[in-house]
Amino acid sequence: MLSIDCLLTVKEYTAVPSPTISGGMSADRTDEFRQAAEEHLPVDAFTFDPHPVQPDLFGDVMKAELDTDRLPLNQYLEFVDGYARLLGVEDRRIINTGIDARTTIENRVPRPLAEADVVVAILIEMGYSGKITSKHQLNPIEESLPWVADLVVGEDTIQIQHHGGPNDFVNEQVLDLIEAVEVTSAQIENIVVTCKIVERI
Image 1 (tube, one colour):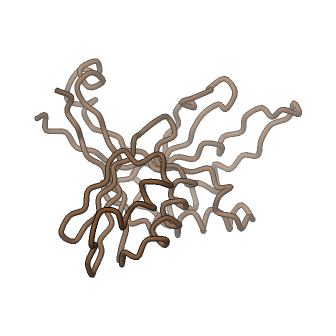
Image 2 (tube, helix red, strand yellow):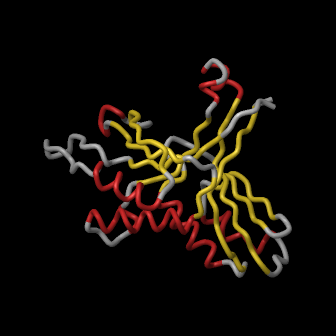
Protein backbone atom coordinates (compact mmCIF):
# COMPACT_ATOMS: atom_id res chain seq x y z
CA MET A 1 0.00 0.00 0.00
CA LEU A 2 1.31 3.42 -0.92
CA SER A 3 1.96 5.83 1.94
CA ILE A 4 -0.42 8.65 1.03
CA ASP A 5 -2.30 11.17 3.15
CA CYS A 6 -5.81 12.41 2.54
CA LEU A 7 -7.26 15.72 3.67
CA LEU A 8 -10.73 17.27 3.46
CA THR A 9 -11.94 20.18 1.34
CA VAL A 10 -15.17 22.18 1.61
CA LYS A 11 -16.45 23.40 -1.77
CA GLU A 12 -18.88 26.14 -2.78
CA TYR A 13 -20.31 25.40 -6.22
CA THR A 14 -21.97 28.78 -6.87
CA ALA A 15 -19.77 31.33 -5.05
CA VAL A 16 -18.05 32.51 -8.24
CA PRO A 17 -20.31 34.61 -10.52
CA SER A 18 -21.54 32.78 -13.62
CA PRO A 19 -23.98 33.62 -16.46
CA THR A 20 -27.69 33.28 -15.64
CA ILE A 21 -30.57 32.20 -17.89
CA SER A 22 -31.79 35.80 -18.04
CA GLY A 23 -28.48 36.93 -19.49
CA GLY A 24 -27.04 38.48 -16.35
CA MET A 25 -24.54 37.20 -13.81
CA SER A 26 -25.15 35.41 -10.53
CA ALA A 27 -24.16 37.06 -7.26
CA ASP A 28 -20.53 37.00 -6.11
CA ARG A 29 -20.44 35.03 -2.85
CA THR A 30 -16.69 34.51 -2.63
CA ASP A 31 -16.15 37.00 0.24
CA GLU A 32 -18.97 35.52 2.33
CA PHE A 33 -17.73 31.97 1.75
CA ARG A 34 -14.19 32.95 2.67
CA GLN A 35 -15.34 34.70 5.86
CA ALA A 36 -17.59 31.84 7.03
CA ALA A 37 -14.91 29.23 6.29
CA GLU A 38 -12.19 31.16 8.12
CA GLU A 39 -14.44 31.61 11.16
CA HIS A 40 -15.58 27.99 11.47
CA LEU A 41 -13.16 25.67 9.65
CA PRO A 42 -9.42 24.86 9.86
CA VAL A 43 -8.63 26.36 6.44
CA ASP A 44 -5.17 25.91 4.97
CA ALA A 45 -5.80 27.65 1.62
CA PHE A 46 -8.50 28.82 -0.79
CA THR A 47 -8.32 27.59 -4.38
CA PHE A 48 -10.50 27.42 -7.50
CA ASP A 49 -11.26 24.56 -9.91
CA PRO A 50 -13.50 24.30 -12.98
CA HIS A 51 -16.98 22.96 -12.18
CA PRO A 52 -16.82 19.14 -12.43
CA VAL A 53 -20.02 18.73 -14.47
CA GLN A 54 -20.53 21.80 -16.68
CA PRO A 55 -17.63 24.25 -16.39
CA ASP A 56 -18.81 26.25 -19.42
CA LEU A 57 -22.15 26.88 -17.71
CA PHE A 58 -21.25 27.05 -14.02
CA GLY A 59 -17.69 28.37 -14.15
CA ASP A 60 -15.35 27.74 -11.23
CA VAL A 61 -15.87 26.04 -7.88
CA MET A 62 -14.33 27.81 -4.86
CA LYS A 63 -12.58 25.48 -2.41
CA ALA A 64 -11.52 25.83 1.20
CA GLU A 65 -8.75 23.26 1.58
CA LEU A 66 -8.62 22.11 5.20
CA ASP A 67 -5.53 21.01 7.11
CA THR A 68 -7.33 18.03 8.64
CA ASP A 69 -8.71 14.64 7.62
CA ARG A 70 -11.48 14.73 10.24
CA LEU A 71 -14.34 17.24 10.43
CA PRO A 72 -17.08 16.93 13.07
CA LEU A 73 -20.46 17.30 11.39
CA ASN A 74 -21.58 19.82 14.03
CA GLN A 75 -18.63 22.02 13.11
CA TYR A 76 -19.53 21.80 9.42
CA LEU A 77 -23.14 22.76 10.21
CA GLU A 78 -21.93 25.75 12.24
CA PHE A 79 -20.08 26.84 9.10
CA VAL A 80 -23.22 26.32 6.97
CA ASP A 81 -25.33 28.36 9.39
CA GLY A 82 -22.71 31.12 9.54
CA TYR A 83 -22.50 31.23 5.75
CA ALA A 84 -26.31 31.33 5.51
CA ARG A 85 -26.44 34.29 7.91
CA LEU A 86 -23.92 36.20 5.80
CA LEU A 87 -26.04 35.53 2.70
CA GLY A 88 -29.26 36.48 4.49
CA VAL A 89 -30.96 33.10 4.02
CA GLU A 90 -32.55 30.73 6.53
CA ASP A 91 -32.88 27.43 4.65
CA ARG A 92 -29.75 25.29 4.91
CA ARG A 93 -30.77 23.36 1.79
CA ILE A 94 -30.16 26.30 -0.53
CA ILE A 95 -26.52 26.54 0.57
CA ASN A 96 -24.52 25.02 -2.30
CA THR A 97 -21.59 23.56 -0.41
CA GLY A 98 -20.15 20.08 -0.10
CA ILE A 99 -17.31 18.10 1.45
CA ASP A 100 -14.66 16.49 -0.72
CA ALA A 101 -11.43 14.60 -0.05
CA ARG A 102 -8.08 15.21 -1.66
CA THR A 103 -4.72 13.45 -1.55
CA THR A 104 -1.14 14.62 -1.38
CA ILE A 105 -0.10 11.93 -3.86
CA GLU A 106 0.45 14.53 -6.59
CA ASN A 107 3.63 15.58 -4.78
CA ARG A 108 4.98 12.03 -4.51
CA VAL A 109 4.30 10.14 -7.72
CA PRO A 110 3.39 10.96 -11.33
CA ARG A 111 -0.27 11.95 -11.65
CA PRO A 112 -1.20 9.13 -14.10
CA LEU A 113 -0.21 6.58 -11.46
CA ALA A 114 -2.33 8.37 -8.89
CA GLU A 115 -5.38 8.32 -11.13
CA ALA A 116 -4.93 4.67 -12.06
CA ASP A 117 -4.15 3.11 -8.71
CA VAL A 118 -5.67 5.20 -5.91
CA VAL A 119 -9.19 6.24 -4.94
CA VAL A 120 -9.97 8.71 -2.16
CA ALA A 121 -13.19 7.82 -0.34
CA ILE A 122 -15.32 9.96 1.98
CA LEU A 123 -16.31 8.18 5.19
CA ILE A 124 -18.90 9.19 7.77
CA GLU A 125 -18.17 7.80 11.23
CA MET A 126 -21.00 7.80 13.78
CA GLY A 127 -20.32 6.94 17.40
CA TYR A 128 -23.21 5.39 19.30
CA SER A 129 -24.09 4.19 22.78
CA GLY A 130 -26.43 1.40 23.80
CA LYS A 131 -27.04 -1.59 21.56
CA ILE A 132 -27.84 -2.04 17.91
CA THR A 133 -29.76 -5.30 17.91
CA SER A 134 -29.29 -5.89 14.19
CA LYS A 135 -28.20 -4.12 11.03
CA HIS A 136 -31.90 -3.93 10.08
CA GLN A 137 -32.22 -1.23 12.73
CA LEU A 138 -30.19 0.99 10.38
CA ASN A 139 -32.32 0.24 7.29
CA PRO A 140 -33.72 3.80 7.22
CA ILE A 141 -30.20 5.04 6.50
CA GLU A 142 -29.44 2.66 3.62
CA GLU A 143 -32.95 2.76 2.15
CA SER A 144 -33.35 6.54 2.10
CA LEU A 145 -29.79 7.54 1.13
CA PRO A 146 -28.86 6.36 -2.39
CA TRP A 147 -25.31 7.69 -2.01
CA VAL A 148 -24.41 5.08 0.66
CA ALA A 149 -21.88 2.67 -0.88
CA ASP A 150 -21.24 0.64 2.27
CA LEU A 151 -22.36 0.57 5.90
CA VAL A 152 -20.39 -1.25 8.59
CA VAL A 153 -21.43 -1.59 12.22
CA GLY A 154 -18.56 -1.85 14.69
CA GLU A 155 -18.52 -2.26 18.46
CA ASP A 156 -19.21 1.41 19.11
CA THR A 157 -19.03 3.03 15.66
CA ILE A 158 -21.12 2.98 12.50
CA GLN A 159 -19.08 3.69 9.36
CA ILE A 160 -20.70 4.78 6.12
CA GLN A 161 -18.76 5.05 2.85
CA HIS A 162 -19.94 7.66 0.34
CA HIS A 163 -20.12 6.39 -3.24
CA GLY A 164 -18.32 9.47 -4.53
CA GLY A 165 -19.17 11.35 -7.68
CA PRO A 166 -18.65 14.80 -9.15
CA ASN A 167 -20.44 16.61 -6.33
CA ASP A 168 -18.99 14.71 -3.40
CA PHE A 169 -20.79 14.80 -0.01
CA VAL A 170 -23.05 17.75 -0.78
CA ASN A 171 -25.02 19.78 1.74
CA GLU A 172 -28.40 18.26 0.86
CA GLN A 173 -27.00 14.78 1.51
CA VAL A 174 -25.66 15.95 4.90
CA LEU A 175 -29.11 17.13 5.92
CA ASP A 176 -30.76 13.94 4.59
CA LEU A 177 -28.32 11.89 6.68
CA ILE A 178 -29.31 13.78 9.84
CA GLU A 179 -32.99 13.12 9.14
CA ALA A 180 -32.35 9.41 8.43
CA VAL A 181 -30.39 9.00 11.67
CA GLU A 182 -33.25 10.56 13.64
CA VAL A 183 -35.64 7.91 12.25
CA THR A 184 -33.54 5.06 13.61
CA SER A 185 -33.60 4.18 17.30
CA ALA A 186 -29.80 4.16 17.45
CA GLN A 187 -28.36 6.49 20.09
CA ILE A 188 -25.93 8.41 17.87
CA GLU A 189 -23.56 10.56 19.91
CA ASN A 190 -21.38 12.24 17.32
CA ILE A 191 -20.82 12.22 13.58
CA VAL A 192 -17.45 12.88 11.96
CA VAL A 193 -16.65 13.20 8.25
CA THR A 194 -13.28 11.73 7.34
CA CYS A 195 -11.56 10.06 4.38
CA LYS A 196 -9.44 7.10 3.46
CA ILE A 197 -7.17 6.03 0.62
CA VAL A 198 -8.22 2.90 -1.27
CA GLU A 199 -5.65 1.26 -3.52
CA ARG A 200 -7.07 -0.49 -6.57
CA ILE A 201 -5.92 -4.07 -6.97
